[in-house]
Length: 172
Image (tube, rainbow, N blue to C red):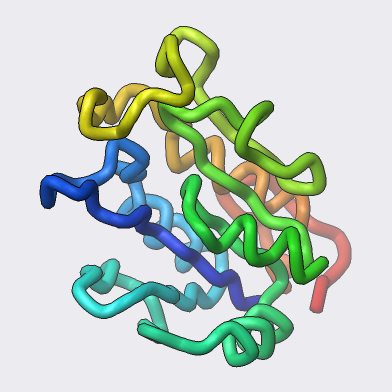
């Protein structure tokens, strides 16, 4: 079974509110990934919630351990948080980054699949403080679209027909 690492949360705002970068479809995406035959491993920090359906929830891992864990996975999926920058600077594998109001052309890395709903959902001033911006769940790509990109990058190790399509070969 192929493993996918998820880094689902961005840090809370200084005023204690959830980040506007919070992806609203994690439970659905994890469920879809599980149904396709992927094992999902979640990383994060103390105080974050475990997403239903993940096989492991690893918190407060040092960077060298995160590198080892990512080596066991076929790819990672993250929001606009520190994990995508960590993977980039350590020259680790590419990932799928889920963007809401931040512009991936400014804050993303070109080796990743950077998914957003469109320019109309971006903050007009990309450098304003996050406390001045409200969370908008409509700004994020749908779970089904993310799953489609995952399967394109790394088909599940199945020879049977799946909800995305049929595969003639197996993948490790």
